[in-house]
Length: 119
Image 1: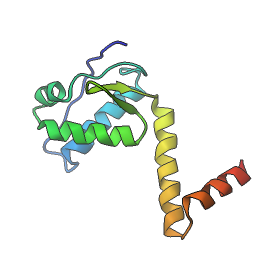
Image 2 (image 1 turned 90 degrees about the vertical axis):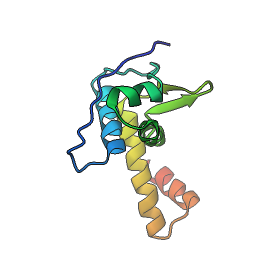
Image 3 (image 1 turned 120 degrees about the vertical axis):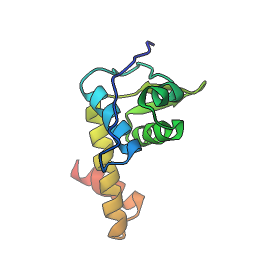
């Protein structure tokens, strides 16, 4: 497993929150192949120092990307790229579908049955 140093930047003059900018930059790095599946990201505090932001800002961005299925958090506090952008897009759409189904009164088991029926 190799570690990668990716180019990320934030713009404090933008209306987009800093953690969202960091997450967006990391998504871009993954999509562009700058950070490949299996590669380890630099520690959050190192990324924070490079970007000039609080470590909690970077951690919030990393957690978002973990929820999207793009990153894995491993023992020893290592963060690795788990998948390419395609999986992240599928996970994002699945989350949207689950939220949509919940708003319309469907439970998870009902949604699973529907997905099995249409596939």
